[in-house]
Image 1 (cartoon, rainbow, N blue to C red):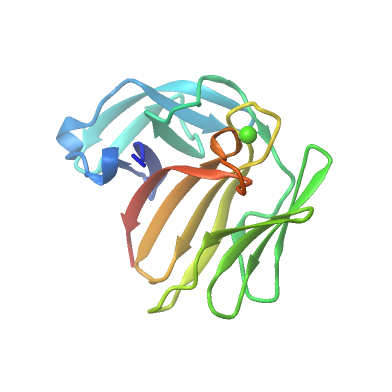
Image 2: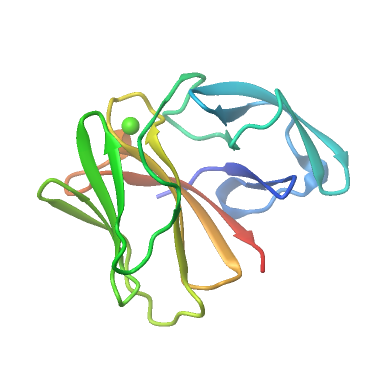
Length: 188
Ligand SMILES: [Ca+2]
């Protein structure tokens, strides 16, 4: 299916990718963005200040998003969890809406999401890895259906940071969440 644009702030730079095509920063849209703040998705203005530096108003959202279906400005609920790395033998527990979820990493680098008797593979074991890294960026209810949504980075390679948004309201049979947007950030 089509994956939608997602922008993120990292190191004072917003990273944008509609349909996996990078916008040139010169073409960066200034409106239509939603900033994710502590308990709210809020419309933000985005302005290119200088080379690779972007100003967001109001300042300091956790990240900014654009063109993602099912997301609109308004309150959001964050789950109880520790953001950060998902490691083998150290599952990440997420408490949301009185339910417990767990992200697990297997020794073969497969990442799964567990809820009650359900298991969903978020990241299948890759054939090749080079310092893989797996992290939970955000957990909570972004699409306001009362169920858990996730933002993750699940990567087989040290320099690749594929940010992904998973929404419960887009889940199909057999899924807890469905990947609806991604942005590939390359770092080192
Ligand atoms: Ca949800």
